[in-house]
Amino acid sequence: MVHFEIKRKEILEKFHLFRSGRFDFFDLALDLFHFQQVNNSVYSRFLSYLGKNDFVPQKLEEIPFLPIEVFKKHEVKTGIWKADVVFRSSGTTDSERSVHHLRTKTHYQENAVYCFENQFGNLGNYRFYGLLPSYIEQGDSSLVHMVNYFMQYHRKADGGFYLYDHQSLIQALKKDQKEKIPVLFGVSYALLDLAETISPDLNQVMVFETGGMKGRGKELAREELHQRLCNGLNLKSIYSEYGMTELLSQSYSSGEGIFEMSPSMKILISDLYDPKSMLSIGQHGRINVIDLANIDSCAFIATQDVGVLINDKEFSVLGRTDSSEIRGCNLLYV
Image 1 (tube, helix red, strand yellow):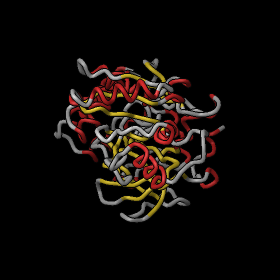
Image 2 (cartoon, rainbow, N blue to C red):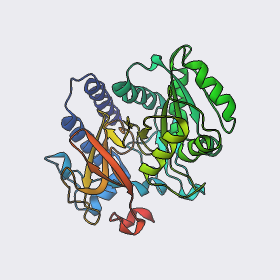
Image 3 (spheres, helix red, strand yellow):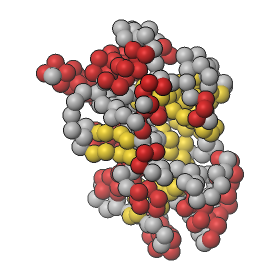
């Protein structure tokens, strides 16, 4: 146990050095792989199933990615510790929700600020609002936690959450334009309802769409959703966040559905039917994520999203895979 804590401390220190530009992504990813290979019982079992107990990757593409569905069935922890906070994904029942145990919430909060500021600058220049009714009603949302932390991060940076009081939200956003840049994080169906029932002029607001329709209506293609939101909210473009319960890092799009990878994330695309086969830029396949912030869970995750690499720093999300296409370790699901 003492050796484990020493090693974890070393990796945390390297992660902080990495964020300040003084440590290499691959070197830290390799350290994390060996750390979790030994100390994460779920990931270790997965590697054993693949016959890679003592495997040493020579490049990022060789690292095995844990199927994201495992977070619905198992506590994915590196080491033995009591969670400071637990995040749960949206879902219709508790049995269908992914669960992410965090050893320390401050680690998540600091990295969320790092990811946002890397693309958009000082958090103090903004005031944050949330139109996230389903997330708030279900509770335990990492997105709500992040937006709430952003609200409290700087003095006078607090905005607020609005469930269904659209008129109060619009008034607050318009008032804020004189002091800060207003930022609105909204779940897709709630933003669409705002756009098509009230149609406010939010041309001075950065609107971040996230989360889909959540069963509140037909799922829309990104292009159609963004066009309807732009028309209804008088916006030139819609921002987006690529993050999820199982990740501690987020990537953002400034429009057109093109996401800039957070420095602490690396996106790799694999063949839908052969997870070991990594694809090149421009080829469509499953999105796999290396999240260096996932020190205490698993840093190597195969998602259920389909996407494409545009270049070595940008990617686009095209949709979701069919669950029948998953090629993972079935032993982990029982």
